[in-house]
Image (cartoon, rainbow, N blue to C red; front, side, top):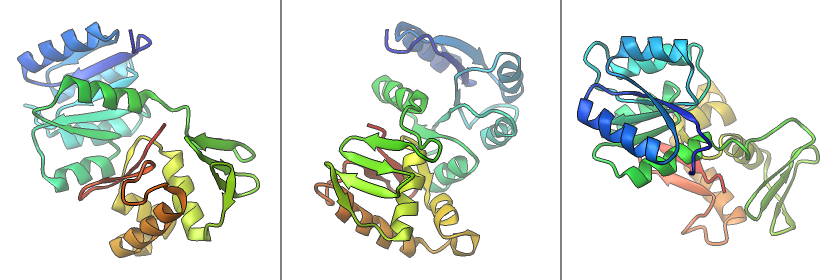
Amino acid sequence: MESGGYHILVIEDEQPIRRFLRASLEDAGYRVSEAASGVDGLRAAAGQPPDVVVLDLGLPDQDGQDVLMRLREWYRSPILILSARDQEAQKVQALDHGADDYVTKPFSMGELLARLRVALRHAHHVGPEGTTVLIGDLEVDLAARIVRVQGEPIHLTPIEYKLLTTMMKHAGKVLTHRFLLREVWGPQDSQENHYLRVFVAGLRRKIEEDSARPRYILTEQGVGYRFASE
């Protein structure tokens, strides 16, 4: 029993996939609700808000991207996209619209369960000022603005520090290039991807044991980055 009894709402129009997901998720200890359309999914989420929504983009009555945006008007818990649309543009659009992760069909249940665990794990997000955030051997004292790796303080530039704390705040979630650029540099630089590549490379050299095989800052090809949550 790995799930803690969390409630998952599956919005998916294909009955065989819903049946497979229900059986697999319930076997892992989750409680499962189903909806076969966008309208029914929005109604179900509003009536009994789940801990996670698993949302297909190819719904019969409306585009899943629209359902995602409607949910994000009020729903703050994780949304995991499950879709046969594997184009990078679709993934980026869903993540920019507020999805926490994206799994492409066909998928393995092991991968989906792992992504659900990450989505539900919020123990390592950045808390109020005055706290210390610890992920693996990386420690950030937010009050003193001190970063330590294996107990040894390291020097970060102001941009590197802001990039690191932004990523740690959203640990486990895929962050698009546009989101990171907007959060760290501001909206005027939201298209300057080369800024991000340069600073991520520099940050990796300082916090990773092997920057060529990063443990913390993971690349989501063509989409953005994910900060490992453990």
